Image 1 (cartoon, rainbow, N blue to C red):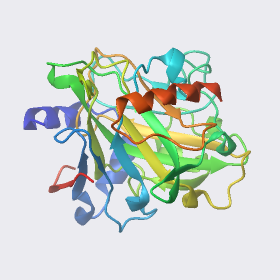
Image 2: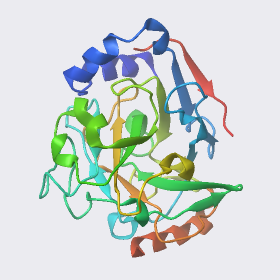
Image 3: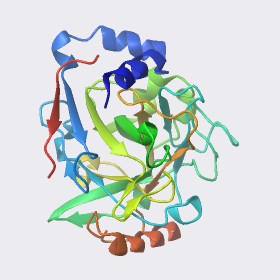
Length: 293
């Protein structure tokens, strides 16, 4: 990623001022960034190093290539789209705040952005460990355009026995009040030291227009949800574009949960991943790159 684009992302960031202030107060040592690069080597996967709390090292970020991945078969629970000026975008799933435009950058409430419960998720057995899985179809500009890449700068997952979405609304500084924090890509809300770079146009057969082929899947250990109830609300918050900004002329990003299945095919196998269509039935400082798994 070019320095010009990186600096542009900082200048155009839409992360709320309260988050920016909080990040500025952190010790300088926390500004060391760790990147999972899912672009240079494809297909690939990576994990973040241990040492932060909640510890993100058990989660796996992988390229994935589900085709087709249009809304009708993808069945997202979170859809969001940033401003036409580019910069960042953020959102969390809830049936509140609609219809249509929801809280933050949420779109298509409550059909394609809606409540999700712990009991909706399938338990995935991957290499002998149990995970919940969440899959992203990013809709950035396609092949041949520098804006086809995108940074995933934070993911935070919460559970709550009650609906807490209205207590947060459009105020991203209140996201931690959604419930019990089960997974955090970055230890502190408003910081983006741990981030992932994806290419929204990439797939095994070559390139797409940016939509129609999923791009990344996140496996989160089931053990992190100990003590939660199947009826608990599950809130999935994400921030994109802080390190590699969104293309303001592109479409929306959307996430779906792997539901109502017992296994998921290996990432990187296009034909096998077609089976995932069944799921619809149910600042900048030193940077080191995590080696592909």
